[in-house]
Each structure stands twice: as C-alpha cells, then as structure tokens.
Image (spheres, one colour):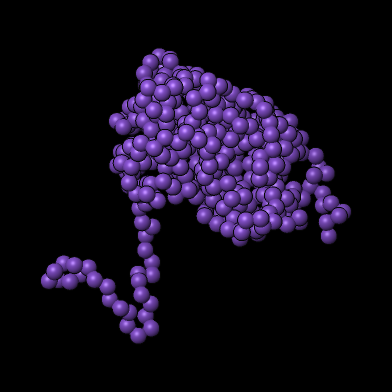
Length: 403
C-alpha cells in the first residue's frame, strides 16, 4: 500500500470477491492510552490484584507525588483509575479538569481544598483512611497530607470518556468554564449527609453527599438483593454521572452469581474474600460441565480490586466472604449506570435483572442451580478460617413453585 516513488500510502480495491481490509488487526491505542503513556508512571492491566499497596509507584511530576494507572480488563474506554501517593507533610499540585473524579483514601490523613475560581469560596475538609469524596467538574483542588508518612489514594475518573471524545488534553485541563451547577459556595457543601432516599431509577437506597468520612465502617441499609442480609447504598456525589455503590455481605454467606456487561470494578473495603468470573456462554455450572479451566479468580482483601465482567460481553461473577467479619466492597462503574446504558427507548420497561433469578427472567443463579463446586469450596474455606457457616441447607433446595 506504499507508493515506492512518493512514499505515500494509498488504498487498493480488492480483487474479484476478496474482502477489503486486513481482516485481523490489533486494538489501536486510544487517546487516553496515549495520555497514560505520556505520563510515564506505568499502568496495571489485568483481572485484578490483592492489594493496591502491591502496585509499583513512580514519580509523577504533573501531580507532584508518585502514582500508577489502573486499567482492569473490561474497563477500557469506560472509565479511568489510578493510585496516587501524597508525600509526607506535603501536598499534590493544584489542578482542575473537565472529567469527573472521586477519591477513596487507602492510607493516611489530610485535607482537600476545593475552589471554583481564583479568589472565590474555598472549601476545606478533612479525610482519613476509608474516606470517599468527589471533586466537582473543572473545580480547582489540592490534596494535602497532614502526617509525616505518605498517604495513598485511589481515584476513579471519566478521563477516558472525555479524552477519547475530545482528543485535546490542553482543553480538558485548561478550559475556563465554571460549572456552577456542580459546585456550591454554601458552607455545608462537604458536610456529610446520612439521609437515605430512594434513587430515582430503581428505588434503591441512595445518599446525596459529597463526602463519606468512613466507608469502611458507616451504616448501610438492608438490601437483600445479592445475598441474605446483604446491605447496600449508592452515594450520589457532586452531581456526577460516575456511578458507584457500597455493599456488604454477612459473615458466613456469599452472593449469588449474576451476569452483566463490563464496567464494574469491585474494591475491597473490609474483610477478605474472592471473586469468580466466567463468560455467560459457559452456563451456570462451568466446573460440572468441564469448563472450570476457563473460570477466572481473584483473592483480595482491603483495597484489593477485581473486574466483575472482564470480557466485554456479559460475564457471570460471584463474590465469597471467607473472613470472620462482614465482607464490605465498593463497586465503581464510571459513567455507565446499568439502567442507563441499555439501548432501550425512553420509558421502555426494565427489570432489576441482576437481582432477579434466572427463573424470574433475570441473570442471577439461584443457589439450588449453581455449580456444586462453589458450595463445597466455600464451606471448606470458611472452616479453614475459623468462621461460621450461615448458608442454611434449605437455600440449596429447589422451590416448589419453580417447575
């Protein structure tokens, strides 16, 4: 396809009934991929990892700390993530940008300053290990470490969405537009709120708050959608499209497997456990059917991470608590709310399909249908850890109402 005389690339029409194009080709770099490469701090790509503290950190001149990008399988192009270390008794460089950004504190204690314009009202709030907070779009912010040891924060962003669409980082970091609908100068803008209301789409528990001081130990309302006694809440922060929730499985119990498409990443907050994930086409009993070698697994504890559906299409995934305490996790989806990226017309009927059993038209595998390997392994792990098994045998019995 090169002209030997001019060196220019030109296209050849296919001959006869040959198909045009390469047929097979590599996934091209996105604008966000190029941005990460240019930052020079490295990027973890994979299914997940046991602890964010295991990631190698590199000097990050733009941020003024050290960091590492995280792009778990299935999140490419959907949302961005990184970990950043704030130097002891120091702070990161002030910045602002058009993409949304949330932070989860993995270690340390300090303050964050947020202001919309030079000379305007500046909010200052404190954070500690387990704090979750959000930065309004295009607001100036600076993260300061109040201790003599480095602090470590996990960030989730919509940077890939903006960069891949606009393709101009100068504009993303330097546009002067002020989003007054995302920022408020009122003194209680970062005052934590514990008020619970139904989310406007599915009616699940939601908190409108820009700061959660301690997601590890805060109260969570009863939900029951994933496992018996399961608790859950959705923080709605700074008007973001970035969707996330906090959930907790009781000791000695585990989640039903359920399937959805890629985007969700689970972050361990308390306790220890493991997640299995496998393509939906393998069916509900992959080990029994001889496909156990295609099931992927990550063991993780506090601030470990795993991609729930790493393959792009719908994958089953199932979460197991093997510790003596409740297993608390947070799920981050980026701007990919599962009820807003359906391709349906406005007003079309939806169902809470990941919470509904297969027999009800959903994608959750009831305990009586799941692969026997899952129960056997879970019971063995609970006994080994000294925990108490609380999965009653009746949960594995087929209900009479199901034909």
